[in-house]
Length: 402
Ligand SMILES: *Cc1c(COP(=O)(O)O)cnc(C)c1O
Image (cartoon, rainbow, N blue to C red):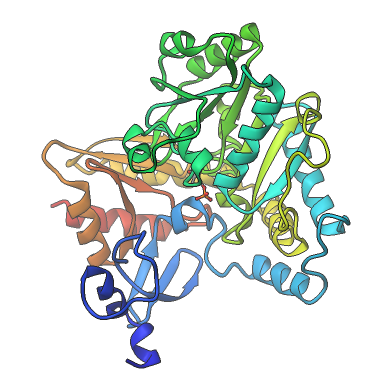
């Protein structure tokens, strides 16, 4: 078996019981093998062109191989990559200030930042923050059914999908769940053992289910009244995806802590926990860390993403292009409705249409989306998607759903 074989799709047939595959099969057989991207477009090893309306799951918000981000990463790689957290570096410092500024502008107040490498790690940091904040005996966190907070053991415990916990029992203790969107259900879970509530502003993996503003405001009031932290997981919704810098801004709330990842690095693995200053100070030297917290390389990508999103007025792009995509999809008779915000949209298919089948047909036609549940297609193209690309994608969906 030669090297060439490994660069083709058929290498993965191993995971379907043939031949040999280099990956531990946690992801199932991939649908395609890519080698190049540009903006909204991807090209497979066989040269087939795709329109990418998933952006690597809401990650590549500024498009594939964005030259501004690429230059920032390449320049930083030639300047300074990593020094450890015994020292500071100018790039991470600049990125932390930029995020603190964005959060202040979003109305959340003065805060501080901890950098990590993924959404799950950002949420792990949030678990430790809330446990130290509450203290032993008041360490319980409440999240919502249908939520997704990551795959590490703590983040999995936060994830309100009990079926996903079963094979890893015993799970860590101290996690409870409520019905998303139902304030009485949350209230029933809060007692004096609870330190924090964590919610997504739109449940992304859960099927693109937005929390309405009144619900999030009621959650905030309840948390304030009971002295419980309100933590918003903006891993998928942050960095302009929903038409504002952060999804919680649509509700006008002021969370105590917020987690980020996906869109903040445009594909560079990086995440962050932000916490308001009075909360952040419960964590002291030695309480948390990561070898790769705030590497100059990863945070160079963050700085470039933030400045490029500002230059493009990315929230406005998400609003405008999201409206065009939503209108196009809504005009298709076999789509019942489109929900979500900005460029994080879920198209609910009419009765009897299987999202997984439509996903496959769209892929065949050259459009990448995702069957986020049995009856919903998720659309999350780069925020830089053009009018023509949106029209092309909508035409493909219309044709496939005929
Ligand atoms: C993707 C996601 C995560 C997990 O992020 P990873 O980088 O995959 O660990 C956490 N929360 C939400 C809301 C997500 O969408």
